[in-house]
Length: 415
Image (cartoon, rainbow, N blue to C red; front, side):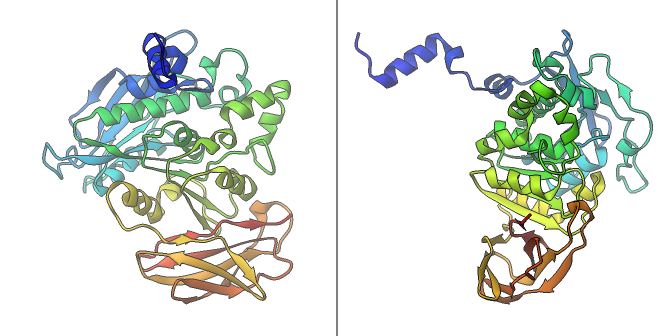
């Protein structure tokens, strides 16, 4: 029988599906997307539910992952049968599943899931007199799960690279998040076509991985976390350098800089100018390699932490614009220097209120530099500022709209 090339592909894929399975690095994406993980409710008698779901094998045994889940229905603020967009929340180093974070998103109108990526679980949720979840992730003792995955430590993040991937924390972290996404999409109250992911610090790192692997998301917001951790001033660089001959493998498999060129999910990077964990050099390289829709919000001296990380309102506004038809954040062009001025064009559904040029002339560690501000003028969609001083080595323009939502241009860096 004579086949056309397409017919041949279809026939081969029917008999040998493994030849066409989507596998990236150690992740079997077809399986992670298609197979809803086995799950078990632990508590459904509070506004914030708790559960476990199946993870990847670790040290030869099956694993389970702990998570909190909430929606407007579990909070008693919506009727059964209503559907909501979904959001997956990824904690950072030293963190866990945060009940208050899940509740914040449920009150925003989302079905939210937050998992623990340390093979453990936090204390039970407690509520104040107003029904607001108390910071469970910052109090009490976390309990190691009997069948927990790898701990969230440097040996599991870096030193285990090489050979079997089942003991690598980055492999488990990304897989556990994608599994949580698949589980979330299976819930009847979730609008499976409108889901987002956001994570803080190491959770931002994992968000970069997941946004590059799981194209079902409509939006991704990595906070602080980025790639190119093997370069520049990254505090992770020494741990990667000491891998020796295995360094290249770690960078290829687990550094987001190697995977972000795959990213087709609209993504918004959120960071501060002086972050010591994810410095601007690595951050802007990560931003630059994303080929699709991308946005950025750089805040001068943004503090590093979980509550400061989930606080910026722009995170919710960006995700709303992709999952709930909310008004988009302003979109800024790359700055262009013309004579003694810098010009930026802005596209915005909202009125713009303020524009500023931020720059530093300091040298040394970027995390230690002092920043200065110059006002910029706005005329219609054109923003104009004085050209940065000749000695300025790092600068960007930030714009604030009528909602007090701030976005920025990509950061210009010179040695």
